[in-house]
Image 1 (tube, helix red, strand yellow):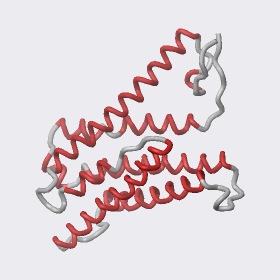
Image 2 (image 1 turned 90 degrees about the vertical axis):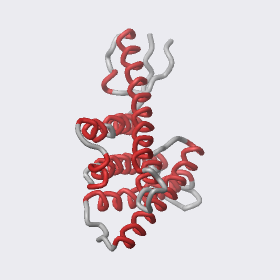
Image 3 (image 1 turned 120 degrees about the vertical axis):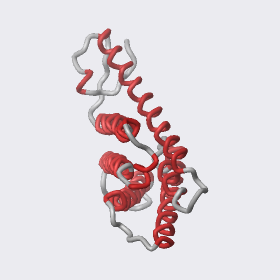
Image 4 (image 1 turned 90 degrees about the horizontal axis):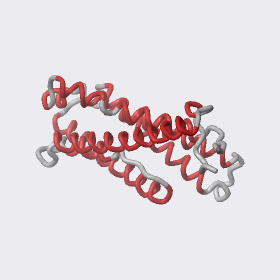
Length: 211
């Protein structure tokens, strides 16, 4: 008897040998997504050279605000994400005020505000998932989890678009050029696809696969 495996349409009706190949490919994709996400964070942290200017702290804070984990650690990390993201927002607002530049003048800034708003909504959904009785909610817990997961997916996709839009900025294009720019520009796409697959499959029915 094989252990329970999360259901996915891609892995349906496979023989056991093919199934294990599929399972290991999924694990490899998840590991690669984490490595890619951490690598992107480190790259942005190095390129921003924090401390060289007020603006330099903004890319670093927003890059750090892209990390997530689970359960109680997930709560801690999500709270930290909101704090760091708000700090990054504060730095860019102060930097623009100092240089007398217009706010919300680019797609990066507009997407960034949408991402922060969606993050706050996701956090609110998370509170509802944990304390439905305390909040006197009539919505079934599974549906609350679905809303929370959907918000998480929207937040991640918005964050990915925000990061990619940031790479179109004058600051980033002055620091990174040529083929390297394209490589780093496409880097956030892979983990976004993996996260999208994980969240969508997480709310599909599960079944046991046995021999």
